Image 1 (tube, rainbow, N blue to C red):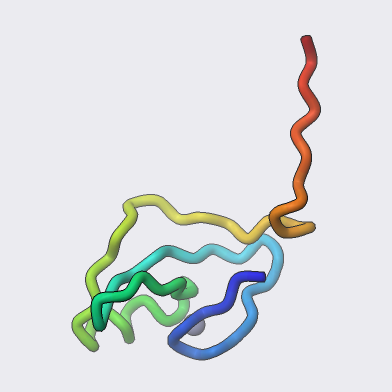
Image 2 (image 1 turned 120 degrees about the vertical axis):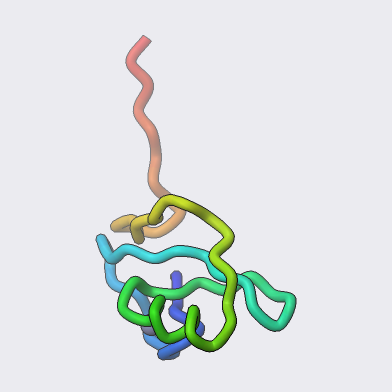
Length: 65
Ligand SMILES: [Zn+2]
């Protein structure tokens, strides 16, 4: 389960987030908190947003051969 390290909130399915680095650690930050952490000196690690998947990490990909 993804959690925003700025507001300590559990991210909802479908919510966008990105990874920011501060205090030498990579942290998940929700889109709402980005201006806040940037002002606090955080550096964005990735360019694109990731989205919280429904069902977490157990998503299965059905291959069509
Ligand atoms: Zn947040």
